Structures are given as C-alpha cells and as structure tokens.
Image (cartoon, rainbow, N blue to C red; front, side, top):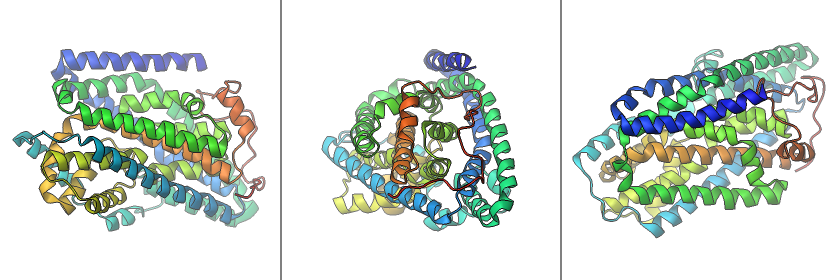
Length: 443
C-alpha cells in the first residue's frame, strides 16, 4: 500500500502541471473546473471535526493529571504569541526596506474587488470570534467545520473522562476505534487528491493568467523569500537548539503534506495527517492532539508576515504611507481578527480588507491590487503556517518531556516508515487508552 501511495502523489504533481497548462491554454475551461478543487477540500473538511475530537479526547483522557494538559496548552500558546510577534516584526522590516508598492496605481476594477473583500472582513470582531468558539450543541461542534468548536468540545469530553477514572477506559477504547475508522476514511478520500489539485490549479491560472503576476512580481517574490528565510533561519535554528532535530529532515518527512497544501492552497487539508505524523515521529498523543489543532488557530506565522507586507504594499501604492505606530496597531488588530482562519483559502485577504476598513478606510481600495495574486500568496501563507505548527509540536513535546528523540531519529532516517494506509501505528507500541499515566519530565 505504501508503494501505491507514492504513485498517488506523483499523480498529484502531474495533475498540478496539467492544471497549469489547461489554465493558460484554455482559461475559460480552467475556471469551470473550480468545483473539482472545492469538492476535494470539502471532502477533507468533512473528517476534520471527528479527527480532532478523537485525537484530543484520547490525548487528554489518557493523562490522569489535568494540570499536565494545561501545561502543554500554556506552553503552546506562549510559544505561538512569541513567534507570531517575531513574524510580525520580520514582515515590518522587509516591507519597509523594499517598499514594493511605490509607482503602482489603482484602477476601477481594483476598487470594486477591494470593496467586495472589505465586505467579507468588516463584519468580524473579537467578540464574534470568542462567541463563535461555543457550538450550538455538543454534536454540532463536529459538523460545523469549526476547528475551535471541535477543540472545545473535545477538551471538555477529555476532562470528563479523566474525572470518571477507570470507568472512562471503555469510552476511550470506543473513541480509539472511531479514530481508526475516520483515519481509514481519510486515506480513501486522499485518492481523489489528483482530481482536486487539477481543478484548483486550472481554475486559479485560468482566472488570473500571466499578466496578473507581472506587475506584482516584486511583492510576491519578496513574500516567498521572507517566508523561506523565516522557516529556514528562525524556525530551523530554534528546532535544532531546543530539540536537536534537523529542520530539513523534518520538512522532507512532511513532503507529501506540503505537496497537498501547495495544490489546494489550504493548510487545513493536511491537518489530520500532521497529527498522525507527529505521533508517529515520537510526539505523545497529548502534545500532538493539543498543539496541532490549537496551532491551526493561533500559530499564524505566514499570515502575520503576509498581513504586514501587504499592508505596507497597499499604503505605499496609494501614496499614504503608515507611521510605525500605525503599522503596529493595525497589524496587531489583524492578527487577532485572523485567529481561527488559518486553513481557509483567501481568509487572509478578507482579514486584510476588514482591518483596513476599520482603521484606515482610505486604504481599502488598495486591496484590489493584490486580489489577482492572493491565491499564490495564500499558498506561501499556508506552507509557512504548516511548517510553524510542525516545529511547534516538536518543541512543545521536547519542553514537556513528551518527545522521543530516538524514535524521531529512526523515523527521519527512514527506518520506521509512516503507514500511509491507516495513518496510525498498528504495532502496539502506544499504551492502551486509560491504562495509566504517561511519564512527564520537567520542563
């Protein structure tokens, strides 16, 4: 089965290339293929709620001391805040140095596109975000598509099972069987990846064409280079210093997930696989089950860089540069407003427009300047966010003593391949749910 999955991802690469060709040669046909990509992403989103629920319930419910779960969550959130701030500052520096928007001018088409995006983002507020975390019912959290709602219900269920003691063990075993079923469904859905990638790429190339990229090449290339340097230098250095894990080995291990994100422009499609692969790498269920879903809502390194550079680009292009204090205040607001939308394609654009509408309405017209390439920039956002969450999971596991470095060495060296058929370890190395406490070493 593993050999067959290699052919699957080769098919994804071929589908991406074919989609680019169709989009350029027959743009009208390419735009009509968008439902193929939309449908594939919808299939992935269909199982995300149940996977998050099962993973977190097993991770939290298997730990007897609730304080250990709070310790993992606190470390993760603290790390996310620090790294988002670092990403914000890097974006500010690069955006101010290259000044990519100078010399550009708005058009009526750009103004109309900006108004449409502003309408999407202007209604969001911090209060709406917080209230949106609470689901209508326990079951609706698994069907609404909201990562945070599923996270909340799963945490409540996990703590409830902890309080039940030994009586909660049968429930954990049932959840474990449900998890295996859902992961098997996900493995089946993944065989539709070539079709989804073909439709998504053909649609975006057919809609934008080559002309949309020429005048905006500077901001797009600068953004990609900035994200690459952030991942390679900042995240790579921290990962090696803290966990003694080579970043490039880790990224190579997650290569198929990066390809999936690149073809769909959504990091959410790879969320279930990241949880499974982090556990296979040697991170405990508790750390992987809490850090990964939380990171998808709060660890937005790529989005922070994007919002920074895009704002400075628009301000420069419209001839209304921002003072440093204005830059920081506006972008901090955008970072808060963007929480929970990391896996949604185009959410960064709506956040950008909504933030400008709320703070500097005269700049909102400039959002139309980057509408044409936002899809391509959203891929870099998603890839950077995904890499940041993978690194964060290893770091939190190391700090809490819940990371098996010897196991990671075997996995990254190829001695313990990941089971692509089930997305789960079937060798019985993991302890049975409810069988006892995991040993936690001090930070």
